[in-house]
Image 1 (cartoon, one colour):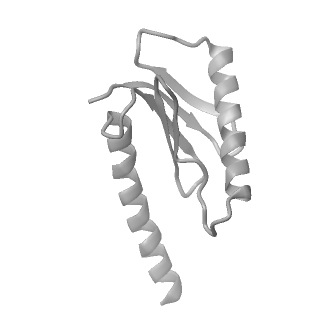
Image 2 (cartoon, rainbow, N blue to C red):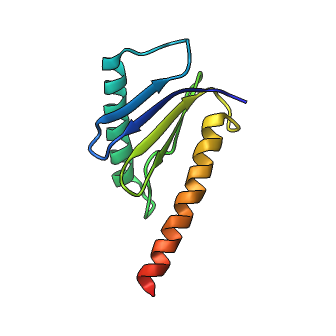
Length: 116
């Protein structure tokens, strides 16, 4: 199972709220983590607007040669991004898949309460 290298929590305006580095290789300084969070927020927002599918929630997975970056956006606009090792069965993918299930349940519950 692949490890989680880092965790970013980004607010809905693109500011970095929390950053934690769990890996020893490739540590980022504060400015790099702020730049990466801002860049990711911009790409995520642009992808929502340019997507040809209705109801797109932006980029959920960015795969590179050495890592995977998984992103989950909550209903409040907070983005939680986990960077981890390659592989779809990685720890970051499992954590975010569980969050998606919980969020989907909340969305379904809210949709039912609005239509009642």
